[in-house]
Amino acid sequence: MNSGTSFEERILEAADKLFNAHGVHAVGMDRIRDLSGVSLKRLYACFPSKGALVEAYLYRRDGWSRGVLSSFVARYEGPEEQLLAVFDWLYEWFCTSDFRGCVFINAFGELGGDSESVAKAVRHHKGAMRKFLLDLAREAQLPHPERMAEQMLMLIDGATCVAAVNDSPEPAVHARSAAEDLIRAARG
Image (cartoon, rainbow, N blue to C red; front, top):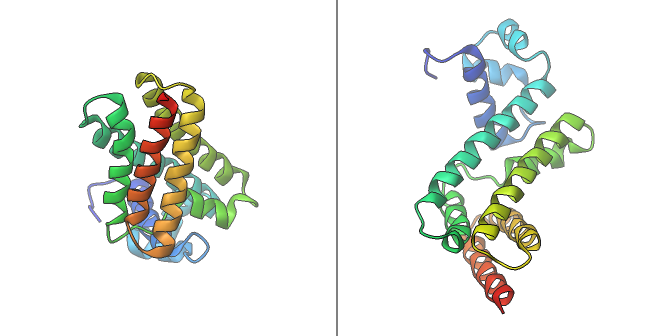
């Protein structure tokens, strides 16, 4: 960890690594303390509960992941190509050594039924992703852009889950092909 970063940032970096690798339930505050190098007292001063830390982690991951996706997609010409580029980004993400599926779906599966703050953070992320896809569908002048955004989000979430289960990036290829079919069908 970089000693020049804030205590909060060091804690969030450690939480991100540990929660992604092991899940939220399996990681105690002591493991986050050990990896971050921040005392337990300081950790609880920054995040008064594990729930508060999980919520902050999810919002931080939301900002990071959508920023990376936006930058990746912006390299492509035209909104339709950008919409399909989302699946190229997925493929690259699925090939990384730390890919363990969608942290939002994983956290919701672990805590969403018991934690309204986790459910809210997950809904925020999925809503922001839907809006991103809706903006691209509108820019591409696709018919029924709201429906297209919903369908694309289903393809993204489905591909992400299957890629994690199968430990393979191939679901991104299949989801991209399905997205191309949806676009072609929408255009008639």
